[in-house]
Image (cartoon, rainbow, N blue to C red; front, side):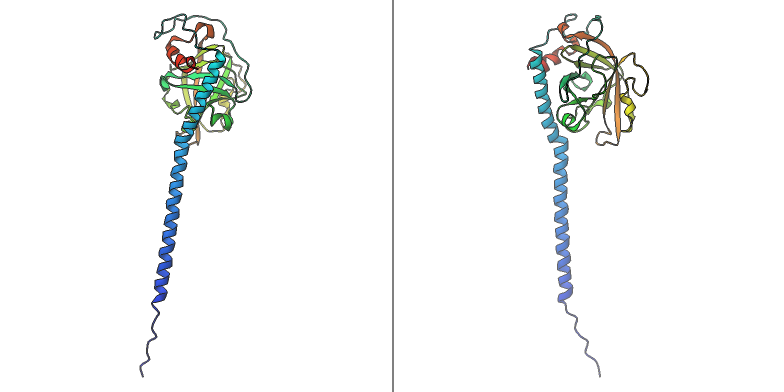
Amino acid sequence: MVLQEKARPAAVPAARAAVLRGTVQVVGELLITAGIILLLFVAWQLWWTNVESDARQSAVIKEFANELGGAPAPPTDAAPGTPSAPVDYGTPAVATAPGHAGTIGIMYIPRFGNSYTRPIVQGTTGDVLDTLGLGHYANTAMPGAVGNFAVAGHRQTHGAVLDNIHTLVPGDKIYVQTKDGYYVYVFRNNQIVMPSRTDVLEPVPTRPGTTPTESFLTMTSCNPRFGAEERIIAYALLDSWRPASAGPPAEIAAQVAAAVGGG
């Protein structure tokens, strides 16, 4: 006697396949949604935060210009567009540091372009660095003082104020304008360090306990450009200064007029 084979229901594999297809579709849609959200986040970080910060920093510069009371005086020792003659204006004026988020002045770096003007603001917390520009380390010197005038800035987001810090070459001039006048620093070298290397902020950078005899400018930012695993440090030395009454150095007179004169 031959036994009749029991028929296997075809509906069971079909149902499992439908569930699998549905699961794959849901997972795929979730992955697409996550990708879109990630792209929007990247766009916000690399584009929109720069737009917002640029607008706020422009407003800070205008406020600074209003406090100065009008357009800067023209250079008194050279015609516009020509190198300034070396004039000794004596010991640099050194202002008292303002309160948190108070404006110290404006930085001009021709290596970064003729339109580069960024406010320097007291403090290095997020509310300063994410919106207002270059943040001054509160425990370091003020512009022109003997010691280390140290500032920090973002590389790729929130205004990207130090995006091109790696392009500086020895001899490049960095100009700092305050209510008292103009300080000219000359770039010396850069260094890549770990975030824990706070000795770069010492009065003599990287040399704790050493009494300073020179005036340094130290700029710090994240490294690499799209990361934050390290820090890139740019060092400069004060070369000269001139009071506000003498007008800006001729090399940046047009930039100062554009940034401050229109305030």
